[in-house]
Image 1: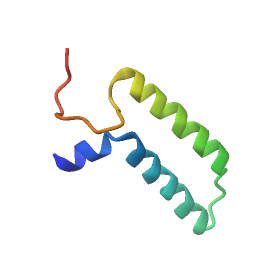
Image 2: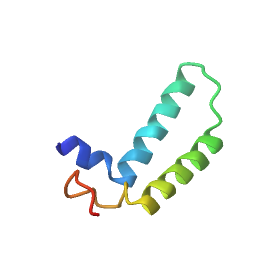
Image 3: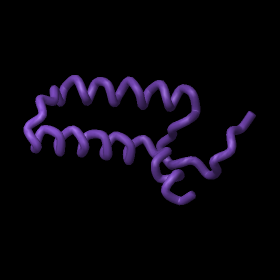
Length: 65
């Protein structure tokens, strides 16, 4: 469950997706990095607003309802 806590950290998620984009570009795929960056920001913003993502990582995997 420690890995799930780390994946709820916004900075970790952004770094992983950016690294995947750079890796795809390295292998010759046409990746628009500006589009990828904008998309990551939008998805993370929605995740933060919904309470799925946060800056420190979630304490538990249970939702606070």
